[in-house]
Length: 284
Ligand SMILES: Nc1ncnc2c1ncn2[C@@H]1O[C@H](COP(=O)(O)OP(=O)(O)OP(=O)(O)O)[C@@H](O)[C@H]1O
Ligand SMILES: [Mg+2]
Image (cartoon, rainbow, N blue to C red):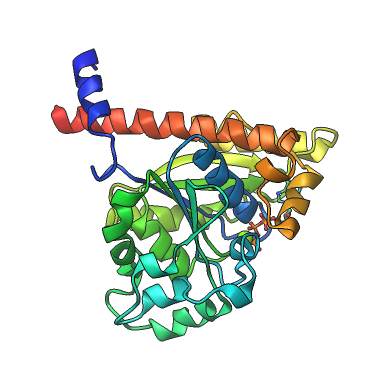
């Protein structure tokens, strides 16, 4: 790509140009680090001066509880899914970081599967709710529940990219087939532009053979899609949500903070490379 084309693209990367990265964090396996990654990746992007919105689509609301008490939450992502659903702006709340915003969840989200059954536009609800707000953010990170139901489908339909956390543990890869099949189905119809941004190994423990073996297995399966950064087991990552802190305010010098900073750098780089590649294709 020529420098002129690259500069031209850079000039168009400001707010409101339709170049917001909407990144779903998904894996239907429970407890693999989706929420920990959503919170700390979003926080790391905000620290890099990207205006970032973190959306909680999990009825467990673990991401939301890491920022706010449930009793101080009025509107939630549940309200985005109804006929005359409320605007995203009413749901979004500021955080201590001026570049980080959160759309909290509540348990009622669990009822949506039944409530939306039979509605032809059920998979598009989140996409429609996000549309008017895309210009306001550089990054939108979506935390999803451990299931491939209507909530995860809504996240994938609304997203430009998918990031898959995989725990360094036996049987870690089992189940990713179903996720990748859902991804392929969504790409074939409602969202052909969706791309896998990458796979990240989480809960890695370099002292154990299990971690080392599974790392090799994951690398063999996913090749270049695997991020170079691994997220190690770090007790600070487990503790920080209880204090309503991200890892960057709770333990900025911990390995968890260092690794999520590096992961954010890789995410920024891959998103940028993808934009350049897409732009070259459009221009060709
Ligand atoms: N790198 C890590 N080091 C130590 N603990 C971690 C790490 N990542 C996640 N945890 C802990 O592991 C548990 C599961 O992590 P998390 O909630 O992020 O997973 P999840 O995939 O979102 O789970 P669910 O599928 O239930 O939504 C949590 O208690 C979390 O604090
Ligand atoms: Mg979670």
